[in-house]
Length: 209
Length: 161
Image (cartoon, rainbow over all chains, first blue to last red; front, side, top):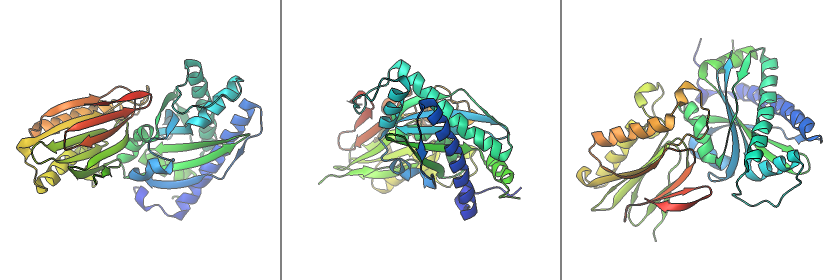
């Protein structure tokens, strides 16, 4: 099997990855709508292979505070996935979920323990439905680990998947999705299959022989 | 007019006084700041992985602790710094998430810190101060003039080491 070089992906790979992003995020939006009991719209995801040095900027600044939910995946494909949510979106979501109404947002305001577990759960559901659709689409078995939450600077959170990508190249695959209900929620998926899993994914999707 | 030079992830740059140098949001990566105490030639490397020899695709030497520190020192020497007058300060190497099960990621922050220390010891460059480990991100600013290394983290007052 020819080894896949992430620095040399052609347009077709992008189209497939965009489609994976689209379907996955669509499912995640539905899960979010069910959870919040409202209608949730979603924009077409932007898929980009981003240089490490430009990653933070792609998310609105290296020091932009974000909530990151990270979990590892195993089964037919292995690697990890991270879902990142802008700080304000995270606060809005938690308030909505807990029925506390929109609180006055203060930048850098820490999440309480109960808010953190709500956030973990939100992330778990969103990532879970994302992976679920990926699994259905590819017929590959995907098992997810327990989620882990951190609220910190975008660049610091991204260093974790970047290190995984760093073992194969100098770029990282970023899938940006905006959900909106009453307010807009900006979220990002960073899917990090290891190299053999990439080939497996693309094969399962019929893109690669 | 002094300016602040920015170093990205898996990158390294020289910085000569009165300029300063920064890298934003170090997570598990390590920010290695080195300066010549006499002529104030300094530099900063933002390394991601401990060992270039463990990885096949290792063309970006700034990415690894071993080759990154070596290259920074080489560039500093080219700019007139003397190895015998060099001192270092390091920051970063956090574990951002409680659960990082992927084998390659287990304690990668700790391993990055250890690899940087090993390389600095090999080059006989003493470490004057460090702010490493734990579980939060750090933005750093380095001033080769004074050797001040300022560490900023979310929800914490900045500190100088």
